[in-house]
Image (tube, rainbow, N blue to C red; front, side, top):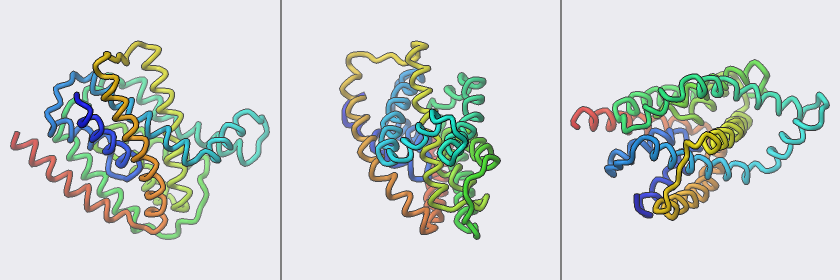
Length: 264
């Protein structure tokens, strides 16, 4: 992999991690178009690195909220901060269970499966369209909602299902305030990404070759900067109920991906 390719993938990851169009799906499509010949393990390493970059950009954007979550975890008092922290923890459980039980099966899907990505993008499009039409979105995130949103996040581990799209759409369909839905969606994934990286490093699953350090660093920086911009943009878009535009986009890309896979 060269530096230009890594930067392209980084920018795509940074934008699509927050925009509801599936970052993992787009990474797989671009790798297929660019003719990426990496083995699944190497592709997964790059995916993890780029996800770490966008997680870091989330921490920067929501540094105040992250501080409150950490405060809530260590205050040992049942106040609003602690409740919010507990909701974040609850939302993580479904994805942790699925990730641990089906890790190998999930990895196998990150191997240029363009047809599967295309079909999942169509599902994302439907979710976004439904959410855009939702009314009476003025509730706070409840404990029950946290679990339901967490299940959506677990399903979104499939390439082509947008994580932010699935979790924000689920939240809005549950009647949760759109701005709060977006913030909760972005914050709930941060501990999972950091935990995944720690697990892979300790387990020896992430191996950097010296020739890959510079390209991956370039990709990391590109993803981080793009993530900073996309995160703030997405919050504004969700607040103004503009998800239908992304629904159209996902439909177009999904159809193109399906046609591409059938012709190749």
